[in-house]
Image 1 (cartoon, rainbow, N blue to C red):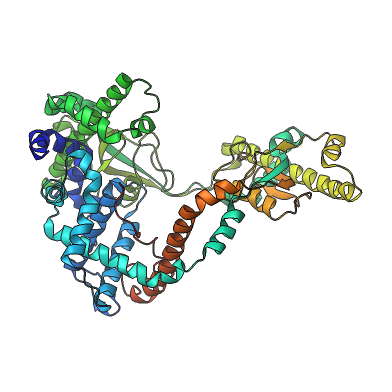
Image 2 (cartoon, rainbow, N blue to C red):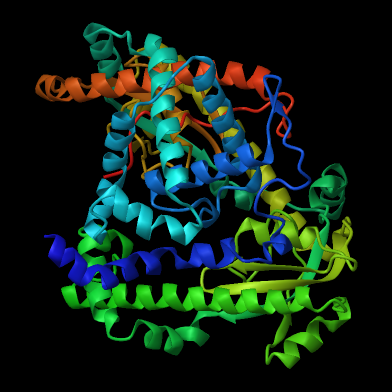
Length: 561
């Protein structure tokens, strides 16, 4: 087996490089200061429970959090577009708080426990040829500038956090099988219901618009039409498609082996990633295309870094020189349409860091980047800022008319729903049947699919009311009765609860062991998070994040398998 691994080590490692190269090309750019990233600036790290946080402690914790994220999700922190710098900083400080608590409580992790955790952590990488912690340390960690000391420190702290979870989450595990069964039955018992929905679309034609009422409507809501502060930037785009030939040359004869390795690694997940690929040949082609796209995107990121390098090294570079420097390097400059902080630039598939950096630019600090998009890397330059404004009615008349008609139609729908509810309850009290009352009112009720509290989605009606609203109405109404009229975003609804449906006892018995274990784990996490929240409120008040609301616990499990 070891001989086989050595034989194929080069191309197996190429799989990992293909999957991670995008992150470290930008992450380790010596010019990352253009992104305002790479950790807290200024050297002020605050103190935790009176103990000053040093730059080394913060850097170590950052690396451990980054490693934890990779080992438990398969991605590095900077690859998660939904996670802001503030989110990352909060996680780093929570990690520092937890490691401090380990020291205070005298939690010491043995070499054996750390080694055992290491073996569990790298198990998912066996499919990519990483068969031991040693290989992980030698092959994966260097790609992020990490080494064995980072891995060992992370393992000891992670195991120590599990001890904290076990200790301070213990109360959450004290749940009996009888209590768990009762909760299971409450969450999984389904109800049979029928709904009457009153929607704005059915009343739109009844709305009349006059200049007087429209003007009054606009005046009352003028603040909602304010156009926020916007910014416009110039940018150079490094499209991955321009580096496709280069990627093919770089991968060369290894490409076929890379495709096969990734197909084996993904297994049945390849269908989830590429649902349009029906045949083995289609899947192979899609994986090949994906590998080439990722590699070409990494090459684009490197070129973007080089251009950023040129801008920073050019001491005389000012805002007006951006087009000249781009032209000298054979690059075209484009300009975004004005965009705000919330929506970001239209037509560019970029993450939130792009917009955040754009609003931080000025004529004195004009450049930022590179930023990674779905298929391109970008370097940007300040163009102009546009202050907020309130457009006059004549400029946005169509939008105001549409808003007015929708608002009025919703009111009409709710009036109709309220009126019908009064009639419905009176006639039900007189012994009339729900369906007959609806028929007399020329209303057609909708029969909903059976659902329970644990139901995650109800596509048939979620365009009419939220799932939570439907659940609240159903499970607060006695079977055989109707819910009160409930306003919704589209108008309103009334729910008739016909009956509670019997549970399948065989399924209940089969599900109980897993449900009990899951419930205890969940309660343990809740108890631990309550403890952590209280500790964070006290311990982190003198840090840059102030009084935090801690994220969910790091978890009581190990890496995904």
